[in-house]
Image 1 (cartoon, rainbow, N blue to C red):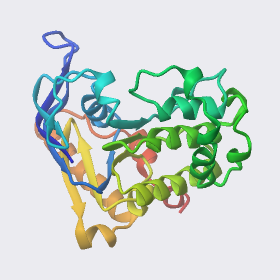
Image 2: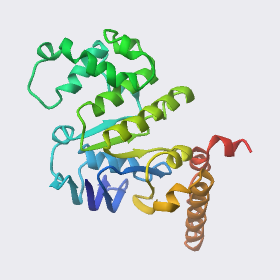
Image 3: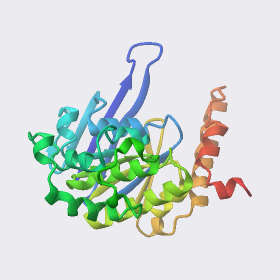
Length: 284
């Protein structure tokens, strides 16, 4: 469904602030795959999503989706076939519009039809059915302004909007990171439900080792703009958060050794390792 072939992205090229955010990244995502992406801050995860969605221009390489080369497609054109949910719940909905109106916008995404024409009563059951999967009672509040809702409620609506017209690919960019634990758990449950029901190809960035182990059929780790390992198959289903933390520590130790040989000290920061460690492990 998705294929990246040696995709590279460099920011501030030719300056003292040059950063190689992606370094010839290659990745294939099959139809129905659910891939979780982990890595320390600055590993290139969000840049990867930006390159796929068209928000970031690749310096080189090719991006294909469902057999079509989309490398040079503008972001608005890609948004017709790629659903995306951001970390900030406010980015996915329009304040000042009701839940019904927000869902109606999603229902006609990419079609040249006015909002007035498309807020139809006969869509109500469709919207209700989709919202019911979130178990938040939002199906009874279709005429509520989304600005009055909590972050978790808005994120659930964003997730429904992103999948209402089944996209070819769903990108989830740390979509629970800004939520409290209860809201995050509800959104993860809705995410699992949506992915299973729609059988859509999904790629999710997360800093939660537990989420990486609980969701999907593949886990990839990024570091310094590259994919450094992938876990799938039988090994993936036996994976634990402790296993992933061990992988991070092994990578850190290897990086430290290389830096010492060069007389340098740069490694994963302690903040990165704390962020990547499950809460239960931190408390032990």
